[in-house]
Length: 592
Image (cartoon, rainbow, N blue to C red; front, side):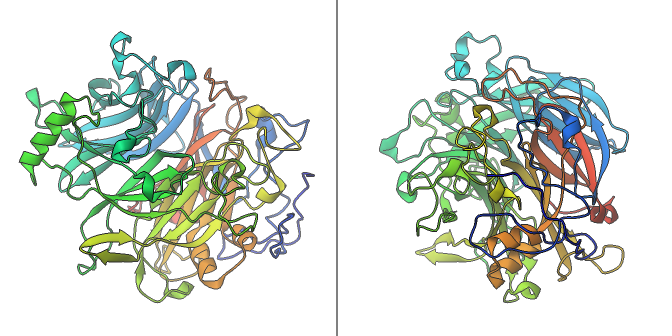
């Protein structure tokens, strides 16, 4: 495999922003597009013997329509998830999880940011953070997990700080003085949670916690390894202090899967955004779980034990879960599974979807579903080939460990249709199209890569977390920059060493209706890319699993208020702006 310069021919501007097609240098049999990325840009995924992944000066590349805004190196490297939120004081803050702390950064002026608070937790790895506000008080929920093998089986009773493998609640009302409030530890999840999400259900806050593994699986009960803890945030506790009250879980049953590598990785949730009251999902709330080779799994948490709606059920299950340490011995309320999708791509065209069970797993390029997120609004797709009904979308992204070819796929699903059987609802998801970095066919990485068999390069160009954003358009102050229809949609995808990629949702929907080839969709849907390179060099993480110093090394990207915020694992906080996002500065969007 030769790493070649992308053929530069002609810049075709679509809607004032989208990148034109370019020649895909690929061994794939699908049709190729002609054209160009942009004026003078090379393939941003660099692999040569002379290239230094740790040298930021070798990664100063972008598509030209994304502008640098700010870089904040924070107080310490080692960063993970971020959330950007307005506060009651009128200012806007980024809450950024880190290897041993959480940074609170004032980004009210994105061009002049400052760290205003730090919560230190030196005995754990804080990989996720979520913000909630209740009656003017502000809280963060932290996900603490030890991912080093030496920490895989902690004896909680002997740790100095038992919250190091727990969900932790801290008060951040005073940004300069964040402090501990409460925590919850599941005794049968020894490495701690990996991802969390917050969801309001009928006026009450709930925590959803992804626990990737158990001490052992209860095969007799039929549960797959790992589950989603469901806990209520009770603000009516003693002395007015909020408390975390686990009430149950969501689990995947083995007999509904294809087998393979199955565990919950990440999940999001959403109250059904449709306004059709005849739809059986109207007003109900669902979890969208990324279950690796079990694909997308959808659970209904509308009838979760609730202190107002079902106080006796809430008391019973809350007490049972606390008494059993959250284990299956007594904590056994389960959210029903109401839908799934695991029809992965068949990239080797052998008639079997690509997975560990059917061949061509290729590091999970098509099957290791790592992230799932429903689109924030129902959309009209009639201008894209749809039938005129409002459609519900869900995006899935894989996480790729090591490949012989490719970088990792993103799927766009239509999750609108459902069936009813004896009163039981079941989603019927279907695929619109897929996306992958357009030069993916020219790359491989990790120990499985024939040309560069470097074990330390696992995850190198893989996608990780993303943000899906709905933009209303009006033809005036908010111009349409895609295919019409009164709305635009964009995905902001963080790739570890591949940087930020911004993708057009309407193009992916249209590709599903037209049957456009995968390669052509990869090109046509790409709006822009940006390789953050703010630090002089990266800093190794001191972890057996994340011992990298790459620049960039992006955990996630999040859109807020006209800007894109990125968490650099080895560097800090990056802020950029896509040119067509500028009109949305100060525009309040419904983005979950």
